[in-house]
Length: 240
Image (cartoon, rainbow, N blue to C red; front, side):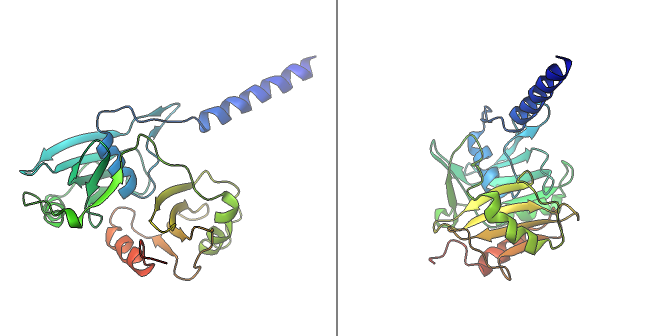
């Protein structure tokens, strides 16, 4: 009897842990447009702050320009970009629009250099007319989309990028980043054996280019130019 009670207790604990780790999340804050932009701009985001339960990320508006652009901060504890400063161009009830290149900067703390802020504003045409043809617009959502590829599809590429990592046994450290109009998918992965992250690109059928289809992030906070160059090299959002 005692053995049976012990087994039942262990099963309940395991079920509880599984439930906590797989609970759904919906953003309930007032800045759903800014939330949606951050998820589509910053690699490694999950859309929530993880504690014993999941909380809304911290989003704070700092400034508006003369044409309605918004300068704001986003924080969820993302290891690649713990704190980020972003500029939104405009939004409506259905979508949020921003410049896809250099729309944010990141830091390990909620402090940003004045020179970097000025450059971010210049890159995003702060206080000048919004050029809609330069904008990328994404649907407004209240949660991050799940991984569109299975662990088994991702595993071979991960093991190529991080050779010798024999501890890759599940998808806990894999995060969906983006998809383009032609079915390409970007996945962010954290290495188990080294303090490294990679952005890996897959085609819609799960195939990949093992030589050119990934980017190792060597600087977690100032990788935006490297990411931009990588997306150009893999012909992101260009017809297949």
